[in-house]
Length: 182
Image (tube, rainbow, N blue to C red; front, side):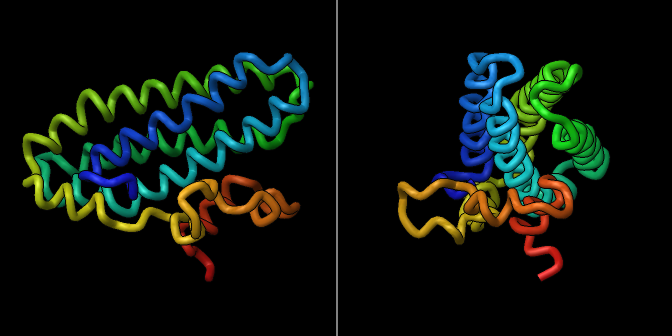
């Protein structure tokens, strides 16, 4: 979202933005510090994207598609599985025995969710929702975008706001981008 065009185009662009950190994870040495940093980057992008879908896309699915409640609930279940994996990864160091297994599970879940959305949900939205509605949804300011004061600014909030100790990273990102608790 926020990339111009309708909500589907914006979310598809968001889906591609997580490909790079996953590819970098493939190239990073097992047990290296970069792997933990890259997982943090993936976490921030995935949670930001999830909040955008939960605030804009899934309410539209519920409102405009036949069986929309069931469709939206299924997507939310996918998000919950991904968030559990992200939380599990936050509890581990890159040197932990199951870190790489969890990264593989995360990538598998994310890939399956993206494929399902792009090949099923987005197709149903194109057929069942007026293009004007999709355009209006695409013009919504996605969570966290208000922090982008320059086109070259990163799409995520500054790391010092999110990587501070305390509650888990997933919860801090979700609170930050959704405005929850403010």
